[in-house]
Structure formats: C-alpha cells, structure tokens
Length: 193
Image (cartoon, rainbow, N blue to C red; front, side, top):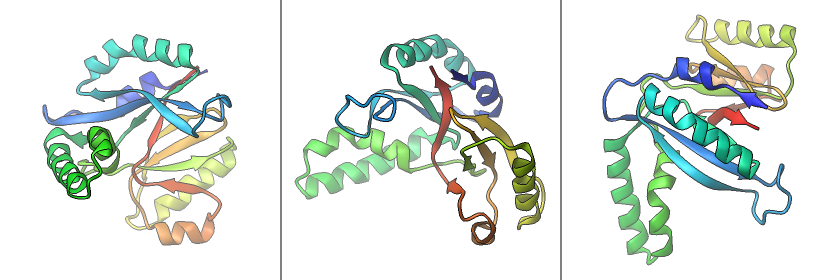
C-alpha cells in the first residue's frame, strides 16, 4: 500500500475559489490484466480545498480498494475559469468536425491538459530508491539554471518515487540522466492499495 495523503495535503495551495486540483481514480491493465484497455478512469474529483480532500479521502480509499485501482493527483493547480474557456473551444472544434461523441468527454480531457499554476511542478520518475543516487540527482538539478534547491517533495510510488521539482534546464539534465523520465504536467500517486 502507498498512502501519500499527508504529504500531498501539505503541498496543495488554494489561493482562490477558482483553484482546484484534478484527481482521478485509475484502473490499470498492469494490475488488472482482464481489462480491455491499458487503463480507464473510475472516477474524477475536482479538489477545491484541503478540507474537501480530507472529506473525500475515505471514499477515494474505498474505491481504490474495491476496484484494485490507484488515486492520482496532478499537483499543478487548475482554474475553473480557464478550463471553462478551453472546454468551450474544444467542444466547438469537435462539433465543427462532426465529432459529437467526444464532446461528452471534453471537460475531463481539458482538465488533464491545461494547468493554471504559475509555480509549475515537474515530476522526475525514479523507479527504485537509492539514497546516494537520489541525493546526486537533487544536487545536480540544484546546480542547473535557475540555481538553487528545486525539490518540493519526494512522493513514494509502488516501485520507487517521484521527485516533485520546480522547473530547471531540461536539456542539460537529459544529457546526464537520459534514463530518467521527466513529466511536466502529470499526476503523482495519492493512494495505491
């Protein structure tokens, strides 16, 4: 089991009623070989406050346990206003292209695409935990422009961890650590049964 509730709760920042975090419960083929696709979303939440997440957490855990699924949250804030404008554009484009079936999924799709967070958070996906390697990676990204500490959190995953970081010179990082995946606007693990 991986439970990052307390760690993630401490990272979230709600600055206005327009802010929310996009959270999904995802069932993956890796853990459920009987499902047809690689993964599918069981339920989506739009987290509007720390207390909102606290209230929903027991339900999230129950859904994950029952469905053998994981709860993933994107740590880059979203804006209801900006999402609404992007949804309007997306649905208009879909209708113009006579793609009527996809229109029902537009809101969910746009939530996954558009961050409104001025303080972007990237994820460095490390598949195992080696304290020396981890410290080396953190020291190296601290030396990249803009110089200074960039690691916001270290989020455990099922087989390793996610370093949550502020942006840095990706080209230089990839020259040294080409084997590590960097995700600029992806979710991290809140809960895995």
